[in-house]
Image (cartoon, rainbow, N blue to C red; front, side):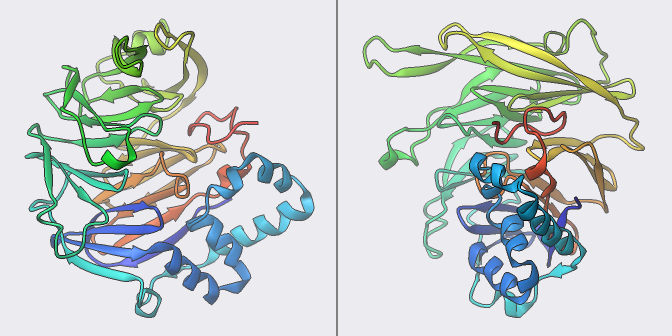
Amino acid sequence: MRSVKLRIPGSYWDSQIYSGELIIFGDDGSIQRVDWSGFVDRVATKHPHVQTALRVAFSDSDLFYNTKVRKILRDPQIESPIKGQLNQLADLQLETETSDLSGHWQHHDSPFDFLPTDTEIYHNEIYAGGEDGLFSFPRSASLSKVKSRLDKHHDASVFQVKASDRFSAIATATGKDGLFDFLLARNPEERRRIGSPRQVATRPCNACDWAFQSIMGWSSQLAFLASFREYKDSESKKKKRVFNKIIDPSEIFGSNPGSANDIVWGSREKMYRFSAGHITVANYESVGKAEDPVEKFEQVGHVDFNPESEIIATGTAPFGTVLEMEDRILVLRSDGCSEVFNGTPIHWRVFPRSEHYSNQLHIVYEDALEIISFTHDYFVDQGKKMFGFAKATE
């Protein structure tokens, strides 16, 4: 099944989608907010013959990952018309019009006086990293008070910000300064309280992602998995997450030592290494007691891969793994197919933590934001795929 695309013309820098709201960072220093749920409903009413497909593709991706719904989808009398709508939707050239956005769009100045290298939204806080450090402000702050609500959390240059989906924590890749994480208060009334930066690894780290309670970090020179464990504090009786050890790619991918030119990345249970014309895939699992975990790596296999140009950046989502190259983005899909999106991207991102939008890839080009939805993964056996982490298992 082909991906579906929605194009929003304009000059942008980055995007986030969170809790029914699309947040677009303009290249002019603005922040634009779109009532995404309302907007998708308006577009769906204009295309009644594919309205279910539109909602499933762009605002309710969690629906078809539900194990009970997935069983219903196997009924040929239900699966066939749903796939028919999704295929029809892929044929449409969806582009926003002014009338579609009327009443759904807000525009105001950004509290950041820089264009962020990376952004993240977590517990209703918008985080932004750049050369001057890590900053945040409340997503719910009124338009007149966003500047005054800005907080700074770290001075190191931030290349990537990633929030955990299992723990109240944020990880930052800070280049030569290594990998850091920040613990957040678990009390709902104290969500904005973020702890002091904790240096997890001193190795150079330009990108990172969460692998359950552990953190995968990588740069163009090396990669590592920072493993964590839990223990119960004798005084507070609360469980605490503490650093365990650093795991090298040689342990993740077996006896093959690899080379200095390898590219390694991963998220959740999926670990990847591109080396010598192929991509090797390993599944990661932490077993045993939380206070003394055993790290296990299952060698899933490898596929031949010879890209036409250098791989610049990588990412992983349920629908597959994403590779950025100089003039295109390539998606190696969970169903064994691949898709190419030509053009030089300014920015792009996936949403691995998201409940409703994990099937989306956002690509910012010079003249538009393209929101690409992958619907094929709803019909893939989640426990057997090579590319993309498991969203639901049965």
